[in-house]
Length: 323
Ligand code: PBG
Image (cartoon, rainbow, N blue to C red; front, side, top):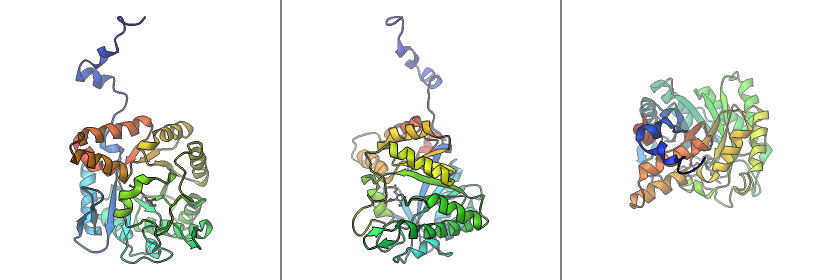
């Protein structure tokens, strides 16, 4: 049986029918909102590279987080911009570090909102690489204790989840061990398992002042040409104790999201990164496309590919439309 008996358009005739047969739905529950925290009080400074996003001091990050929670968003992820950087990135694990302060303030303002802390050294090192340097290479094994120390200090401040984004080998295991030894076995790990060396991080690096001062991150982040390798990274992270895994970026890697979804049973996050956000925002500003429609279409595509949750700068805007 075929045309004219079968007419797929029949089920597209009305909004009601389209709604009835829709395979993928979006809700504020799906979103994780990234916040950029700076030192001080009362600071709210627009980020030039990310229209609509701001650098926030811990007190205002707490306000922003509470507003996100009120829109139905279940979680925020925090990035810190310290006043002082050094070769080892020691502000990353300072008890009074910006992120640690922000976690405490957010937990006070919105106790039920989940707080995720990005674990990486690139925002804290004076050279902008994600780990300790040995000559011009990022040394894997000596970086692990520093990442573990950072995760423990974030968890002590009250983080519900820690999310290592550095791409050192063995970091998930090192962090799990350190958390458990510190009596923090309830804190979960969301591993940036398949994180690619992507050009789409450009606006973030300006926002987080974390661009490497020399070279690039290709010796630790993944080659965009590889998908099987993503499955290897995911299974290693699971063996090391990851509670959730992630693919990053999202839009140029929908095939990877799908393959990871089919190969593992853990909750899967996708990070729709700064460049994805900036492309839509900039095209919309120039009147080239309908920004809201493009935003919802892309977020739907990421879910359709298999992501359970999406880290996105659009979180409040999308939640506002969907809620
Ligand atoms: C830290 C980190 C980066 C992003 C998230 N965590 C930048 C990088 O790896 O250079 C990028 C996020 C985005 O572009 O939105 N390592």
